[in-house]
Length: 377
Image (cartoon, rainbow, N blue to C red; front, side):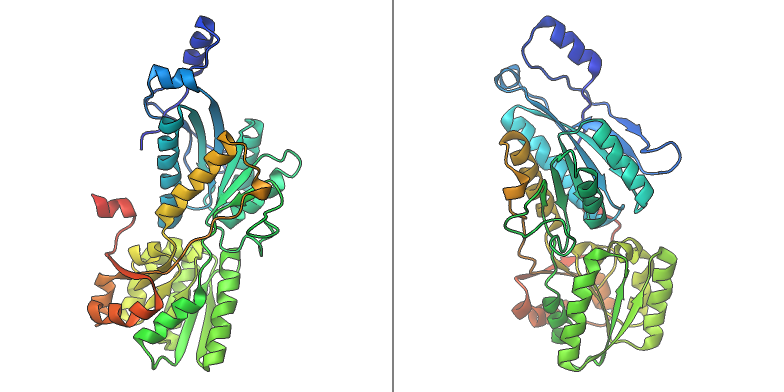
């Protein structure tokens, strides 16, 4: 999708000619840093609009500005942002409006995150979008007085994180979409593939709110089943690599990771460690499988992005109140199997699919790549 800037010079000229609402479009985009030296992430301010006819501009012409902050550069979250922008572009064409997008990625740096959000506030954006739990929580705090609407995306436990009072009635200026993981279903898949598994590794970042509930559910499941488990935690890519090696030494039969952004970002660096040891890595998102895990189970992040964009538009154009707009949840019953890793583990994909069938809505195939766009090229 090409993002388009709204140039001040064009707008000024148009305002001089008439009082009718107009919008200027350009294929150019500008990039800036969230702060002079604190962030290496790319920042962009653009319009996601496509070319519109003069008639549609005259019939509406409303213009909105939103600020999107992504937590970290990984396949799942990037896919969400791409699909938010793609759907917003469609909405612009459908409704004859302009949605200017200010985008940045804080790369899991809390200081940079807060600066990005402060910049959005200073720019008086009409709505903020927080991709992942830490960003959503920071936006909630930053808008406590202004009550600027906040829409989050991919928050696993919005109630537990204190973002909403309930999924049905959020109760404040914050609502959004949840990628809550059905942990028991992932556990079922582990034992469907290997009923004799005796020891399960739990790999996660203890500081990730998105992992907390899922790990507790996994422990409860394994306790009830009388199966031993080993926990290994990490907060950096280097620690993740060491934790993966430790789990191999622990002699685990399988490893489980929930929707954990720290582990997701390091998956490309660790998947061979598990595959070479004959250990399947079961995870909470298809992006893990894309990056080399044996299996990813969870929501369709492309669809989550599009649904989130629809919510954004409903708040901007229809005046819907976030406090009364239910959090969007999804059927997360898709199991995505990396066929390359499946073969390396000595497993037959058809046999695996048959074993998984009773525990998920469908089984899909994927091969190892850095991003979903790589599979399309």
